[in-house]
Length: 264
Image (cartoon, rainbow, N blue to C red):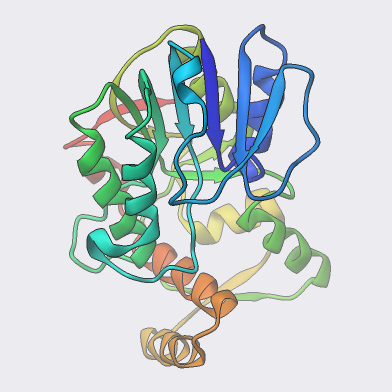
C-alpha cells in the first residue's frame, strides 16, 4: 500500500506522518512546500487543483485528504477545495480517508463547514472513511497555537455565548484512530468522533489552556463579524470562520442521533 497525503504540513498531517513513519508503508507527501521528510517518504510539489503525478505507478493507493484552502471563500462547486477533490479523484485511488467536520443542525454554517459538507457528499460514492472530529486539541498546533500565546498573555478572553457541549479529542488519540481504522485495519463509513468528556467551550479553555474567559453579547459578536468581513483579509476571514464555528457548536448528544459515533 502507498499512502498519499495532502495537508501533510498541518496539525493532523504532521502528527500522522510521524506515526506512519514507524511502519513500512511508503508515503507520498503532496504539498506546496517540502517539509522535512522521513525515510519512507517522497515529496511531490502539489496545490489543490493539481492532478497526482505518476499515480498509475502504484496499484493500491490510500489518499489521506487533509488539505483545505481558507483563501477561497466561494460556496458551491466553484470553490477550490471541491474542485481540487474532483481533480484528485481522477487518479487511480483505491480508498479515501477524509477528515471533515460535524454538520450543524441548523442552516447557519460557516464557509468551511459548507465546503467540507460538499466534499463529503461527493465522496459518498467512493470507498471512503469519513471522520468528523468534534474538537481536536494539542498544546501548540493549529488553532491551539493561538490559545497557547493567549495563555501566556494572562488575559481574560471574550468568547461567544455557547453552553452547548463539545467533546475535546487529544491529537494523539485522533492520530491513533486514523492509524487503526484507516491504515492498519481498513473500515469504511462516516463517523462522528468525540472525546470521552463533554464540556462547554468556556470550561475547555480553562481546563486545557488555563485561560479565563467571559461571554460577550450576541450583538457584539455580530458587529465583530461584520468588521472582520469588511476587512476582506485572509487572516480576518480565518478568525471570522473560527468565531462562527464556536457559535455553531452543537450539543454532541443531538448530533449523535443521526451519526455513527466513535468515542476516543
